[in-house]
Amino acid sequence: MNLGKFLKITESEMRILHLPIGICMERYGKQYEEDAEMILSFMELLANNLDYDFKQIINRYFEFVNKQIKMNKEFLENGSYKYAKEKQIEPIINSKEFQIDNIFTLGLSYVCTPSRYELLRYVNGYIKQFIRTGDRCLEIATGIGFHCFCVDLQDAYINTFDLNFYSGICLNILGVSPRVNFSQKYYLFNEEEKYDHCIMIELLEHLQEPLEYLKNVNRVLKTGGKAILTFAIRTPQVDHIYLFNSVTEARDMIANANLEIVTQDYFISSFMYYDISQKESLAEASKYSATYACIVKKH
Amino acid sequence: MKEKLEVIFRRVLEDEELVIRDDMTASDVESWDSLAHINLILQIENEFGVKFNITEIQGLRCVGDIINLLHRKGVS
Image: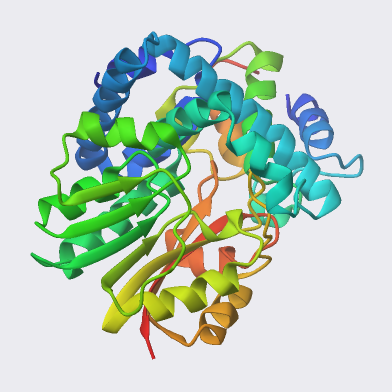
Protein backbone atom coordinates (compact mmCIF):
# COMPACT_ATOMS: atom_id res chain seq x y z
CA MET A 1 0.00 0.00 0.00
CA ASN A 2 1.42 3.40 -0.87
CA LEU A 3 1.09 6.64 1.05
CA GLY A 4 -1.37 8.13 -1.42
CA LYS A 5 -3.79 5.27 -0.91
CA PHE A 6 -3.41 5.52 2.88
CA LEU A 7 -4.15 9.26 2.76
CA LYS A 8 -7.26 8.54 0.72
CA ILE A 9 -8.52 5.91 3.19
CA THR A 10 -8.02 8.32 6.10
CA GLU A 11 -9.44 11.34 4.25
CA SER A 12 -12.64 11.98 6.19
CA GLU A 13 -12.93 11.43 9.94
CA MET A 14 -9.23 10.56 10.36
CA ARG A 15 -7.85 13.72 8.77
CA ILE A 16 -5.89 14.63 11.87
CA LEU A 17 -3.46 11.86 10.87
CA HIS A 18 -2.60 13.90 7.76
CA LEU A 19 -0.95 16.59 9.85
CA PRO A 20 1.90 14.46 11.25
CA ILE A 21 2.24 12.68 7.88
CA GLY A 22 2.69 16.09 6.30
CA ILE A 23 5.49 16.89 8.75
CA CYS A 24 7.31 13.68 7.78
CA MET A 25 6.85 14.38 4.07
CA GLU A 26 8.24 17.87 4.42
CA ARG A 27 11.27 16.79 6.43
CA TYR A 28 12.19 13.54 4.70
CA GLY A 29 10.57 13.64 1.26
CA LYS A 30 11.04 10.64 -1.02
CA GLN A 31 12.81 8.53 1.61
CA TYR A 32 9.83 8.83 3.95
CA GLU A 33 7.38 7.94 1.15
CA GLU A 34 9.37 4.82 0.31
CA ASP A 35 9.67 3.80 3.97
CA ALA A 36 5.97 4.47 4.54
CA GLU A 37 5.08 2.25 1.57
CA MET A 38 7.21 -0.55 2.98
CA ILE A 39 5.70 -0.23 6.46
CA LEU A 40 2.11 0.03 5.21
CA SER A 41 2.61 -3.01 2.96
CA PHE A 42 3.93 -4.94 5.95
CA MET A 43 0.90 -3.85 8.00
CA GLU A 44 -1.40 -5.12 5.21
CA LEU A 45 0.33 -8.51 5.33
CA LEU A 46 0.01 -8.55 9.11
CA ALA A 47 -3.68 -7.66 8.88
CA ASN A 48 -4.29 -10.51 6.41
CA ASN A 49 -2.37 -12.92 8.60
CA LEU A 50 -4.56 -12.05 11.58
CA ASP A 51 -7.79 -12.05 9.49
CA TYR A 52 -8.30 -8.31 9.81
CA ASP A 53 -9.35 -5.91 7.09
CA PHE A 54 -6.70 -3.16 6.80
CA LYS A 55 -9.33 -0.48 7.42
CA GLN A 56 -10.10 -2.18 10.76
CA ILE A 57 -6.46 -1.79 11.76
CA ILE A 58 -6.52 1.91 10.89
CA ASN A 59 -9.73 2.34 12.89
CA ARG A 60 -8.15 0.67 15.90
CA TYR A 61 -5.09 2.89 15.59
CA PHE A 62 -7.31 5.96 15.34
CA GLU A 63 -9.16 4.92 18.52
CA PHE A 64 -5.78 4.61 20.22
CA VAL A 65 -4.84 8.13 19.06
CA ASN A 66 -8.08 9.52 20.52
CA LYS A 67 -7.54 7.71 23.83
CA GLN A 68 -3.99 9.03 23.84
CA ILE A 69 -5.21 12.61 23.39
CA LYS A 70 -7.42 12.21 26.49
CA MET A 71 -4.54 10.66 28.43
CA ASN A 72 -2.22 13.50 27.50
CA LYS A 73 -4.78 15.99 28.79
CA GLU A 74 -5.07 14.13 32.11
CA PHE A 75 -1.29 14.01 32.40
CA LEU A 76 -0.99 17.77 31.88
CA GLU A 77 -3.63 18.30 34.58
CA ASN A 78 -2.31 15.80 37.13
CA GLY A 79 1.42 15.69 36.44
CA SER A 80 1.59 11.92 36.83
CA TYR A 81 0.98 8.71 34.91
CA LYS A 82 -2.16 6.67 35.58
CA TYR A 83 -0.21 3.65 36.88
CA ALA A 84 3.09 3.30 38.75
CA LYS A 85 3.40 -0.46 39.43
CA GLU A 86 4.05 -3.38 37.10
CA LYS A 87 1.26 -5.36 38.81
CA GLN A 88 -1.26 -2.69 37.79
CA ILE A 89 -0.50 -2.99 34.08
CA GLU A 90 0.03 -6.77 33.97
CA PRO A 91 -3.62 -7.65 33.23
CA ILE A 92 -3.68 -4.93 30.57
CA ILE A 93 -0.52 -5.92 28.70
CA ASN A 94 -1.28 -9.62 28.85
CA SER A 95 -4.70 -9.27 27.25
CA LYS A 96 -5.04 -10.36 23.62
CA GLU A 97 -6.88 -7.16 22.68
CA PHE A 98 -4.12 -4.97 24.05
CA GLN A 99 -1.41 -7.04 22.39
CA ILE A 100 -3.07 -6.82 18.97
CA ASP A 101 -3.70 -3.09 19.34
CA ASN A 102 -0.12 -2.61 20.53
CA ILE A 103 1.29 -4.26 17.41
CA PHE A 104 -0.98 -2.28 15.05
CA THR A 105 -0.15 0.95 16.87
CA LEU A 106 3.59 0.32 16.82
CA GLY A 107 3.47 -0.23 13.07
CA LEU A 108 1.17 2.57 11.99
CA SER A 109 2.77 5.11 14.32
CA TYR A 110 6.02 4.73 12.37
CA VAL A 111 4.13 6.26 9.45
CA CYS A 112 1.85 8.65 11.35
CA THR A 113 4.11 10.07 14.06
CA PRO A 114 7.24 12.07 13.12
CA SER A 115 9.12 11.26 16.32
CA ARG A 116 8.52 7.51 15.88
CA TYR A 117 9.66 7.61 12.26
CA GLU A 118 12.76 9.55 13.24
CA LEU A 119 13.48 7.05 16.01
CA LEU A 120 13.20 4.15 13.55
CA ARG A 121 15.77 5.85 11.30
CA TYR A 122 18.05 6.49 14.29
CA VAL A 123 18.00 2.87 15.51
CA ASN A 124 18.43 1.44 12.02
CA GLY A 125 21.32 3.85 11.56
CA TYR A 126 22.97 2.47 14.70
CA ILE A 127 22.50 -1.10 13.47
CA LYS A 128 24.04 -0.36 10.06
CA GLN A 129 26.93 1.62 11.54
CA PHE A 130 27.95 -0.51 14.52
CA ILE A 131 26.66 -4.08 14.17
CA ARG A 132 28.98 -6.39 12.27
CA THR A 133 28.79 -9.92 10.87
CA GLY A 134 28.77 -12.45 13.69
CA ASP A 135 28.06 -9.92 16.47
CA ARG A 136 25.83 -11.12 19.29
CA CYS A 137 22.95 -8.83 20.16
CA LEU A 138 20.33 -8.74 22.87
CA GLU A 139 17.03 -6.94 22.32
CA ILE A 140 14.41 -6.47 24.98
CA ALA A 141 11.07 -5.34 23.49
CA THR A 142 10.88 -6.83 20.01
CA GLY A 143 7.84 -4.84 18.97
CA ILE A 144 7.07 -5.47 15.31
CA GLY A 145 10.53 -6.82 14.66
CA PHE A 146 11.98 -4.18 12.34
CA HIS A 147 15.19 -3.87 14.37
CA CYS A 148 15.67 -7.65 14.34
CA PHE A 149 15.17 -7.60 10.58
CA CYS A 150 17.95 -5.02 10.23
CA VAL A 151 20.29 -6.92 12.56
CA ASP A 152 19.62 -10.05 10.51
CA LEU A 153 20.58 -8.18 7.33
CA GLN A 154 23.94 -7.45 8.96
CA ASP A 155 24.44 -11.25 9.39
CA ALA A 156 24.54 -10.83 13.17
CA TYR A 157 22.77 -12.86 15.85
CA ILE A 158 20.02 -11.52 18.06
CA ASN A 159 18.17 -12.90 21.06
CA THR A 160 15.00 -10.86 21.26
CA PHE A 161 12.40 -10.85 24.02
CA ASP A 162 8.87 -9.49 24.20
CA LEU A 163 5.77 -10.39 26.18
CA ASN A 164 3.65 -9.79 23.08
CA PHE A 165 2.75 -13.02 21.28
CA TYR A 166 2.25 -11.16 17.99
CA SER A 167 5.88 -10.03 17.88
CA GLY A 168 6.68 -13.61 16.91
CA ILE A 169 4.14 -13.48 14.09
CA CYS A 170 5.68 -10.23 12.84
CA LEU A 171 9.10 -11.87 12.68
CA ASN A 172 7.65 -14.78 10.69
CA ILE A 173 6.11 -12.38 8.19
CA LEU A 174 9.41 -10.51 7.90
CA GLY A 175 11.05 -13.85 7.07
CA VAL A 176 14.00 -13.48 9.44
CA SER A 177 16.69 -16.14 9.49
CA PRO A 178 17.43 -18.56 12.37
CA ARG A 179 19.98 -15.99 13.57
CA VAL A 180 16.98 -14.25 15.13
CA ASN A 181 15.83 -16.06 18.27
CA PHE A 182 12.51 -14.80 19.66
CA SER A 183 11.22 -15.61 23.15
CA GLN A 184 7.83 -14.54 24.42
CA LYS A 185 8.90 -14.03 28.03
CA TYR A 186 10.86 -11.80 30.40
CA TYR A 187 14.62 -11.80 29.94
CA LEU A 188 16.21 -12.72 33.25
CA PHE A 189 19.71 -11.27 32.76
CA ASN A 190 21.15 -14.65 33.73
CA GLU A 191 24.21 -14.23 31.51
CA GLU A 192 27.49 -12.39 32.00
CA GLU A 193 29.43 -10.43 29.38
CA LYS A 194 27.78 -12.22 26.49
CA TYR A 195 26.64 -9.51 24.12
CA ASP A 196 28.32 -7.07 21.78
CA HIS A 197 25.14 -4.96 21.59
CA CYS A 198 22.04 -4.40 23.61
CA ILE A 199 18.95 -2.80 22.04
CA MET A 200 16.31 -1.44 24.42
CA ILE A 201 13.96 0.86 22.55
CA GLU A 202 10.83 2.24 24.24
CA LEU A 203 11.24 -0.15 27.15
CA LEU A 204 12.50 1.62 30.28
CA GLU A 205 9.34 3.65 30.91
CA HIS A 206 7.41 0.36 31.13
CA LEU A 207 9.48 -0.76 34.12
CA GLN A 208 9.10 -0.06 37.80
CA GLU A 209 12.88 -0.03 38.29
CA PRO A 210 14.63 0.99 35.08
CA LEU A 211 17.93 1.64 36.91
CA GLU A 212 18.18 -2.07 37.80
CA TYR A 213 17.70 -2.92 34.13
CA LEU A 214 20.48 -0.55 33.15
CA LYS A 215 22.85 -2.04 35.71
CA ASN A 216 22.04 -5.46 34.29
CA VAL A 217 22.74 -4.18 30.76
CA ASN A 218 26.20 -3.28 31.98
CA ARG A 219 26.65 -6.83 33.26
CA VAL A 220 25.57 -8.66 30.10
CA LEU A 221 27.61 -6.50 27.73
CA LYS A 222 31.09 -7.63 26.78
CA THR A 223 33.98 -5.24 27.37
CA GLY A 224 33.71 -2.69 24.60
CA GLY A 225 30.05 -3.55 24.08
CA LYS A 226 27.48 -0.89 23.29
CA ALA A 227 23.80 -0.39 24.00
CA ILE A 228 21.22 1.80 22.31
CA LEU A 229 18.59 3.07 24.72
CA THR A 230 15.59 5.36 24.72
CA PHE A 231 13.79 7.17 27.52
CA ALA A 232 10.22 8.49 27.17
CA ILE A 233 10.22 11.94 28.74
CA ARG A 234 6.86 13.19 30.03
CA THR A 235 5.02 10.73 27.74
CA PRO A 236 1.87 9.26 29.20
CA GLN A 237 0.62 5.95 27.82
CA VAL A 238 -1.58 3.29 29.37
CA ASP A 239 1.40 0.98 30.02
CA HIS A 240 4.00 3.59 31.00
CA ILE A 241 4.69 3.45 34.72
CA TYR A 242 8.05 5.13 35.29
CA LEU A 243 7.81 8.87 34.67
CA PHE A 244 11.03 10.38 33.36
CA ASN A 245 10.54 14.06 34.02
CA SER A 246 13.63 15.26 32.21
CA VAL A 247 16.55 14.32 30.01
CA THR A 248 18.83 15.14 32.95
CA GLU A 249 17.13 12.43 34.98
CA ALA A 250 17.79 9.93 32.19
CA ARG A 251 21.46 10.91 31.94
CA ASP A 252 21.89 10.60 35.71
CA MET A 253 20.38 7.12 35.62
CA ILE A 254 22.80 6.10 32.86
CA ALA A 255 25.74 7.34 34.95
CA ASN A 256 24.44 5.49 38.03
CA ALA A 257 24.44 2.30 35.97
CA ASN A 258 28.12 2.89 35.18
CA LEU A 259 27.46 3.38 31.49
CA GLU A 260 29.01 6.13 29.43
CA ILE A 261 27.11 8.11 26.81
CA VAL A 262 28.77 7.97 23.38
CA THR A 263 26.20 9.91 21.34
CA GLN A 264 22.69 11.16 21.97
CA ASP A 265 19.69 12.57 20.16
CA TYR A 266 16.24 13.94 20.89
CA PHE A 267 12.88 13.25 19.24
CA ILE A 268 10.08 15.66 19.99
CA SER A 269 6.48 14.44 19.96
CA SER A 270 4.78 17.33 18.30
CA PHE A 271 2.32 17.96 15.50
CA MET A 272 3.44 21.56 15.30
CA TYR A 273 6.28 23.06 13.40
CA TYR A 274 9.41 23.44 15.51
CA ASP A 275 12.92 24.42 14.64
CA ILE A 276 14.77 21.12 14.59
CA SER A 277 17.96 22.84 15.76
CA GLN A 278 16.11 23.57 19.03
CA LYS A 279 15.24 19.94 19.79
CA GLU A 280 17.66 19.61 22.71
CA SER A 281 16.05 22.49 24.59
CA LEU A 282 12.53 21.43 23.58
CA ALA A 283 13.16 17.98 25.06
CA GLU A 284 13.45 19.72 28.44
CA ALA A 285 10.39 21.99 27.90
CA SER A 286 7.47 20.87 30.05
CA LYS A 287 4.80 21.16 27.37
CA TYR A 288 6.48 18.68 25.02
CA SER A 289 6.67 14.92 25.21
CA ALA A 290 10.03 13.74 23.97
CA THR A 291 12.17 10.67 23.47
CA TYR A 292 15.77 10.88 24.57
CA ALA A 293 17.89 8.34 22.70
CA CYS A 294 21.52 7.51 23.29
CA ILE A 295 24.28 5.07 22.51
CA VAL A 296 26.19 4.03 25.62
CA LYS A 297 29.15 1.80 26.39
CA LYS A 298 30.46 0.02 29.44
CA HIS A 299 32.73 2.21 31.55
CA MET B 1 -12.64 37.39 11.28
CA LYS B 2 -9.93 38.12 13.81
CA GLU B 3 -12.51 38.37 16.59
CA LYS B 4 -13.90 34.92 15.77
CA LEU B 5 -10.37 33.57 15.63
CA GLU B 6 -9.59 35.02 19.04
CA VAL B 7 -12.68 33.33 20.50
CA ILE B 8 -11.41 29.99 19.17
CA PHE B 9 -7.92 30.57 20.53
CA ARG B 10 -9.30 31.54 23.95
CA ARG B 11 -11.52 28.45 24.04
CA VAL B 12 -8.90 25.94 22.90
CA LEU B 13 -6.05 27.42 24.90
CA GLU B 14 -8.35 27.92 27.92
CA ASP B 15 -7.36 31.54 28.46
CA GLU B 16 -10.18 34.07 28.48
CA GLU B 17 -7.71 36.96 28.65
CA LEU B 18 -5.70 35.90 25.61
CA VAL B 19 -5.21 38.57 22.97
CA ILE B 20 -3.91 37.21 19.70
CA ARG B 21 -1.27 38.98 17.65
CA ASP B 22 -0.17 38.33 14.11
CA ASP B 23 3.31 37.29 15.22
CA MET B 24 2.11 35.03 18.05
CA THR B 25 3.46 31.47 17.91
CA ALA B 26 3.11 28.36 20.07
CA SER B 27 6.25 29.27 21.97
CA ASP B 28 4.47 32.42 23.26
CA VAL B 29 1.63 30.47 24.91
CA GLU B 30 2.29 27.69 27.42
CA SER B 31 -0.98 25.86 26.71
CA TRP B 32 -0.48 25.91 22.93
CA ASP B 33 0.92 22.40 22.64
CA SER B 34 0.63 19.72 20.03
CA LEU B 35 -2.89 18.66 20.97
CA ALA B 36 -4.10 22.23 21.17
CA HIS B 37 -2.63 22.80 17.72
CA ILE B 38 -4.72 19.99 16.21
CA ASN B 39 -7.80 21.32 18.00
CA LEU B 40 -7.18 24.83 16.76
CA ILE B 41 -6.93 23.68 13.17
CA LEU B 42 -10.05 21.54 13.38
CA GLN B 43 -12.09 24.26 15.07
CA ILE B 44 -10.90 26.95 12.67
CA GLU B 45 -11.88 24.72 9.75
CA ASN B 46 -15.34 24.14 11.26
CA GLU B 47 -15.94 27.76 12.20
CA PHE B 48 -14.99 29.21 8.82
CA GLY B 49 -16.21 26.31 6.65
CA VAL B 50 -12.80 25.68 5.08
CA LYS B 51 -10.48 22.73 4.74
CA PHE B 52 -6.71 23.02 4.88
CA ASN B 53 -4.53 20.61 2.97
CA ILE B 54 -1.26 19.18 4.30
CA THR B 55 0.96 21.79 2.63
CA GLU B 56 -1.16 24.63 3.94
CA ILE B 57 -1.14 23.26 7.50
CA GLN B 58 2.62 22.87 7.34
CA GLY B 59 2.98 26.56 6.55
CA LEU B 60 1.17 27.70 9.69
CA ARG B 61 3.86 29.04 11.99
CA CYS B 62 2.04 31.95 13.65
CA VAL B 63 -1.40 33.52 13.98
CA GLY B 64 -0.64 35.82 11.06
CA ASP B 65 -0.09 32.79 8.81
CA ILE B 66 -3.53 31.48 9.79
CA ILE B 67 -5.16 34.83 9.03
CA ASN B 68 -3.40 35.08 5.66
CA LEU B 69 -4.44 31.54 4.77
CA LEU B 70 -8.07 32.23 5.68
CA HIS B 71 -7.97 35.31 3.44
CA ARG B 72 -6.61 33.20 0.56
CA LYS B 73 -9.47 30.77 1.15
CA GLY B 74 -11.93 33.63 0.67
CA VAL B 75 -12.78 34.27 4.31
CA SER B 76 -13.19 37.97 5.00
